[in-house]
Image 1 (cartoon, rainbow, N blue to C red):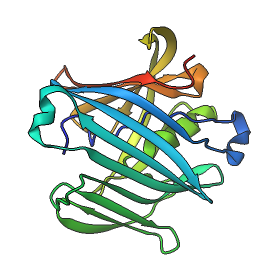
Image 2 (tube, rainbow, N blue to C red):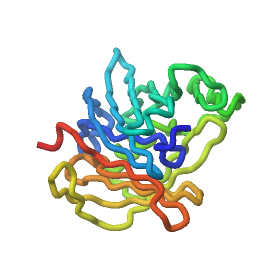
Image 3 (cartoon, rainbow, N blue to C red):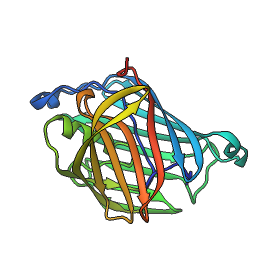
Length: 239
């Protein structure tokens, strides 16, 4: 997949309106558009993420484009879509896909969530596999949004099950320490979380506590070396 993808590399930097505390059951997610920069093993890219609402369904779209000389590779753009609904304030994915304009069975991923039958079916690496649905199961794009909703409701240590297409893994959010980051020339207080996926590629998130846990930065470390960094560049929450 695209070099700028972190871990399974499906990174979401969202701009949302969250209520506080027990009001989460009445959560309404507002449409948004936000941008961030990506640096992954020397490859630079830009990523744009948007959210729209169509009836009771939300559509989250992400487009990633390589920058500089990397554009000459002919790879990308990569389009990522997650369709979901809110069920009692919880993100419930319905359909997820990622790929380029030209289909590539070895790279494309598609996941269908059938909550009525209790089965999720994923297509990845040229194969189709089915898994039983678990409560609050997420796709590779929706898991961060689901985690932010839980953080906003006051829980600081929790785990989510993520269907990655060819497998299902547990993502545990582990709070580490407070840090101040410089984002768009503004000093913003954040809390760093380690996302434990039982992987040698360690994944860290910096969430802004006072901005409804907006993701400020994401970093992947492998062998004690930073392999990739995603940094927020624009958001209407930053004035």
